[in-house]
Image 1 (tube, chains in turn brown, green, cyan, purple):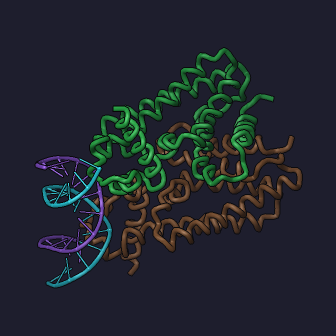
Image 2 (cartoon, each protein chain N blue to C red):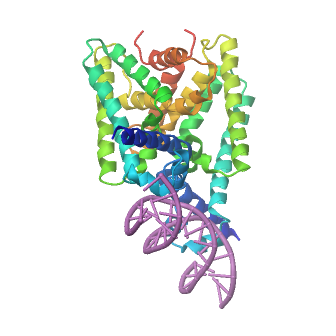
Image 3 (cartoon, chains in turn green, cyan, orange, purple):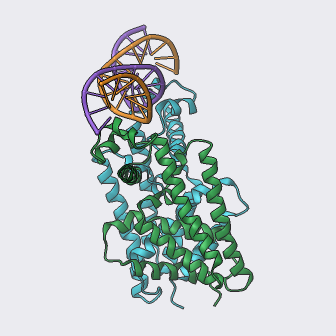
Length: 192
Length: 192
DNA sequence: CCTACCGATCGGTAGG
DNA sequence: CCTACCGATCGGTAGG
């Protein structure tokens, strides 16, 4: 029972890696089987289908982001600190969690209905809560007034490149990354 | 002769659109044929192969960016103005040129060798010339000192989301976009 | 530009 | 967990 769960998790992680490298559509179940040293047909003792694998990865990942949003919303600090906490979380996910690619990359577009619609709703929920924090900071005078969507998506997207680059093992530390990126993104936002 | 060239261009644009929406691997030649009102086999009177279509789109797009870099490098202004010009160009491409998706999205990863390696070299060339301008501005004291790669990729990535969002026809004008994004990205970089 | 068709590969199942 | 195999779909060609 426990062993089965481990194998399932192993397959899921191998799938996330392959989906990231080659894309969902270009990854065959035979590719995935090779990555975990099985025959393709044996995968189906552990998982339901290729589409189900994508679904599980996408929704598990979305839940991580929503859990963190719950936590940040309960923080008793100003908008500045909340945004900083969220940016740090995004950076940590992008550099540490291989499945987080589903939020940054676009592989979730291969979800089938009704899951695609449901996933988009979770994204919208997360985005609008993030946007509220930005608007809260603009209203209190902490942040400059700007189009909230432009700020929001600029923050999201700028963190996206990390998975392309960070794995290459350059001389940049996670701390450097968090410090430099937060500064770059927030100094355009902060009221002097 | 002229008619054939138009059809080829039409097919290329339909392909760029489909590659963007569904991804290269998930787009079949039958999908593409339907989009231009032909049978799949008839496509091959105008194009060589699916891989060739991707190749043409990728390299044509790379050339646009390199041409603009040539132009900017010849400008007799400071680094600040050069970076601003490049950011505006990126935004314009993302909002107006449907094929520019190949630079922002990752569909170029489906290029076959040796073209994949060649394309990566063009990207590297563009990136290192962009990085030089940033370093030039840091050396002259125009910009704050920061890790050039972090600044570079943050700029690139932050413009990437535009194609997801801008087409939706929101109330944001291109001018608003250029003004707000440039401000957001540059104010963290500028020396006060 | 279409009809007819090809070999290869796909996700997945049967049966043990 | 594997062997053997399925129907569907893929990119592409032959021939007209």
